[in-house]
Each structure stands twice: as C-alpha cells, then as structure tokens.
Length: 83
Image: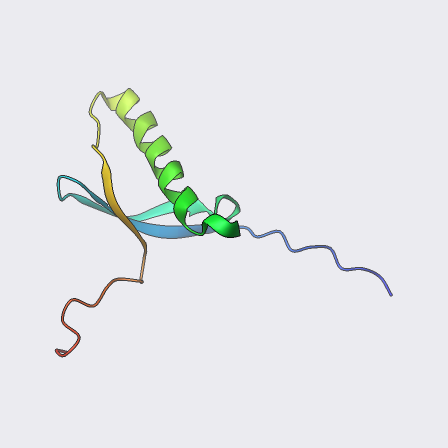
C-alpha cells in the first residue's frame, strides 16, 4: 500500500486587531503556514507587527502597539442575555 503525502495547508486565517489607542483593523490575513504548533495563534502577532512595521516605514506613520488579536468570527459576547 502506498503512503499518502502529508497535506500542505494553504490559505490564510483572518484576524481582527485592536490597537492600544482603540483603533481596530479587521480581516488581517496571516498565512496558515505561520500558525499552528504549540504556539497556537501567537505567531500571528509577530506576522502582523512585521506588516505594520513595513507599512509604517513606507508611510512614515506608525500604528502603535497591539492590544488584542482575535480570529475573525471568534468575538467575545459582551451581553449574552440579550439577542
């Protein structure tokens, strides 16, 4: 019986980023290959910070420090009793 080749994960995972000044960016793409392992979603912060640094270098304006990162669609329910 032939062995199967391991699946190579392709694509992106979307993240919502909230910065320390309260501004928010949605749907920031992070490659699936950068995520996973024991670190979970922690490498996403490094990837997004690197993108922000590159953008700041080109535009001359920095975004500031990241406060929180959540996968898009995994938002916390602020008031679970209301619909």
